[in-house]
Length: 94
Image 1 (cartoon, rainbow, N blue to C red):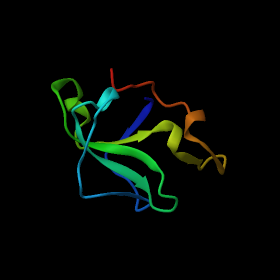
Image 2 (cartoon, rainbow, N blue to C red):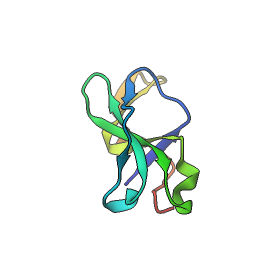
Image 3 (cartoon, one colour):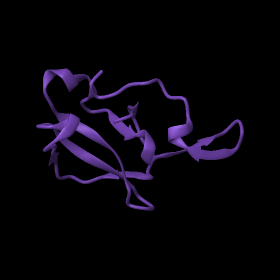
């Protein structure tokens, strides 16, 4: 899973009050809130609530799925897919 991290988000991103629990993959056994896009309803990331010590550094951060977000580049005034933006390479395993 390719992710981007932030300590804040805009009003375009919402999350439910109910916790989800990861049943497989990198979030196995973790409790998290799912982040969704307010306009299209697409899942764009998560906020990790509880996890093992290996993922503890991600708790309370907004973790975005790079393939599920779109970026607006102010300098060029272009909208492009986030997967085409050069983010530092960070995965849940790291």
